Image (tube, rainbow, N blue to C red):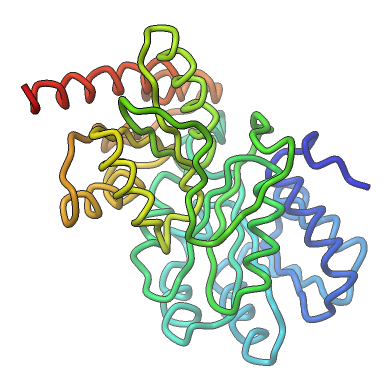
Length: 319
């Protein structure tokens, strides 16, 4: 029995697809010369006849995956997030999105926590690119346990998926299990003063921020918005109606990511004060992951400061 709480999201991915591949022979895995990094090596060792090493040719990998899908297979194509989005976007658009091909693109090394590899390997545009594509489902799990359930849901659901995973091990949020449902946010904490809506690694930091704020008498709702597309509009609207103030948090560019999605929902339904935490229109440098997060304001104290700001705006609005 695998203890997924001890694994990074990428390790959890490699292990669960290997398990599922033993049961469902339709599952095939494609890799772009990164099997040791994206952890598809486990599947390759267990099911070599259904593992396709495509080499440094991500565009071809996507086209092959689409062809396999057309033959009734369930292909999972994996590489680093920056390559899965920026390098092969045209193939994803033409071969997967437009024909609604049953391809699951699972990337690792998302965001700036790739660290020392530098800006060339830091995917900060990937969620915006995939959310822009019709027919795609887009997921950014918060920990290894949710990753397992998200991968199960992606394989069980027909159609194109993009799942964004990280490099390093992340804090475990769902130690007691996760009931992942595509397109549905999970309320981890409730509160009346403001709502923090987060995705990916920023979920654990949002919980930390909420606990800091509680010491000052500020009570926050925390929503794990692991599915960015289709986004849970009802939970966003309910959070705005119940708390009157929203903060979003993501390891991604502010433009086109979670903050933009939430702003669109709020402006069309229930406008309330909104502050977004994310990467502000810049490429990052090489450095330790924690240093880069600090440099870009992707920390629990920064989220807490944003909540105080948005609560002040809410109070001014109603006085």
